[in-house]
Amino acid sequence: MFKSTFFNTEEIELFCKATADENPIHTSNFMHSIGKQVVVPGMFLFSKIINMLFEQTTICFNAFKVLFGNIVEANEEVELGFEACPNNSSIQYLSAINEHDSFAIKNERSSAFVANNVSKPVLNEGVIRKIKFSGKQKEIFSRLIGCTKNALNDFLFAIAYASPVLLKSIHEPLTDIEREINNLIDKTANPGAASPFYQSLEILRSDQSITLPNEGEIDYNIQFEREKYNRTYVANVDCEFDSKTLFQSKYRLIAIPEKLMLRMVKDLKI
Image 1 (cartoon, rainbow, N blue to C red):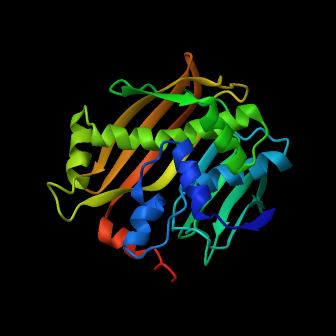
Image 2 (cartoon, rainbow, N blue to C red):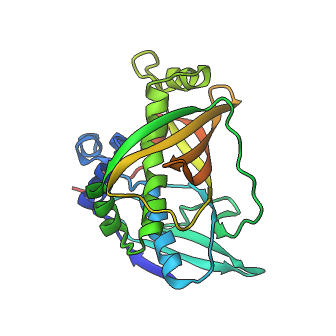
């Protein structure tokens, strides 16, 4: 199932307000000032696709792999949707297609599937970061992605909310790896600073019945690992509310020079 849609700037900025995402590439003030289109958050695309999937299936997908191959911009037509793997109907490929599939890298595609007997990873050196949320934020998020299922909406909201928490960990570092990444993207110390760019995200949903109240605090236990110095890093995240695990995830981040990343974004049409 695929659906053609587009995301206007107001929707993008509302989504970022709801999820506390302060990345300037999602704001018109910054992007228009440099003559570029506003970029749609990857989690906005992902949330819309997963909501579409759960509206059309009775399969309890609990595992997801998301690949961020390219950028989708404001007011750009994009085909969001999913289709079964030809060899295994219990695997659904996820797509966000503009000029090509932005949720694919080379021959690998994003997917949703069922994972069984998966043990919870132990983050011995993780740092717990807490972030508050409100019912208003959840309501805006739900309206923007069109989700009417409370548990699914709250799961997707918690995933989207992890993005600003990861950036906060980098901008307010407490561990050696966090300080290393911070130095890499610090424009004051490094004029040619890179930007952390998600290359992939793996998610394991632990309990499909958990819902969040109208306000509270989510705990994110985050542990960064270095794959290649000044190049690639992994962030392992264990998300909990009220001592219940909503999901575990693994983000693979690749450092891309900011000028190169902005070059990927189309110029603003006047």
